[in-house]
Image 1 (cartoon, each protein chain N blue to C red):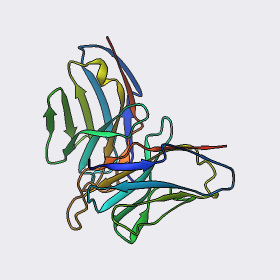
Image 2 (tube, each protein chain N blue to C red):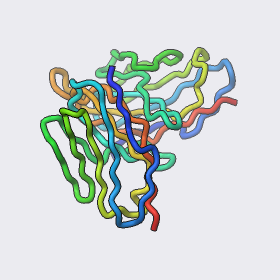
Image 3 (cartoon, rainbow over the protein chains, first blue to last red):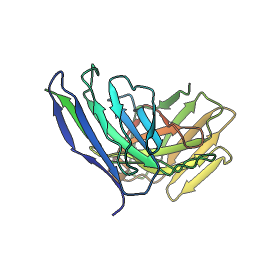
Image 4 (cartoon, one colour):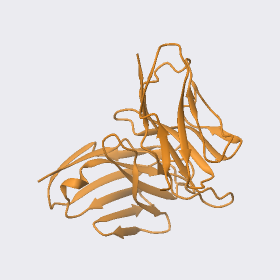
Length: 116
Length: 111
């Protein structure tokens, strides 16, 4: 089945540690996105990538880092600099058309990160 | 930058009644408006979307209306069923790029 896979579903981090969240898609989409979801605040964009080896900061990039070495993979690292990392993290992907509009975004089922 | 306001934050209806969720946006350049449904522990699922060159779009029991002048768009669900219970999010973007989301509406359909 084609889709977006996020792993693990639940993740725990100790204070001062970095942790990496996985996002893999087999939809052949060029664009990938990371969002953070907190209760009552909707989804906020952390980072996005329109093409391999290129990515841009979203609205809340501080304390996070990403890489895009392969088209199907867009891992997110939550660093120790992120002061309030407890949240639900969602990955999305879409067809990207430079010079025209992208396709609609489709989401994975998320990773819930908690601090021990 | 773009800001999207969504109301109400919670909505409770009887099975069979209609439900309406409203959103306003601030950036007149926004031209794409999707609606997502999120069930507990899952990622958001796209249920309907509309572009700014269209005033209304319908898909079975779900419809979306857009008023570009007022920068306002709404989701209408008719003949609600218990399985419609979920959190619904509106969003706005330019050319389906960065999505700016509303705060969400928790819909409860009582049998």
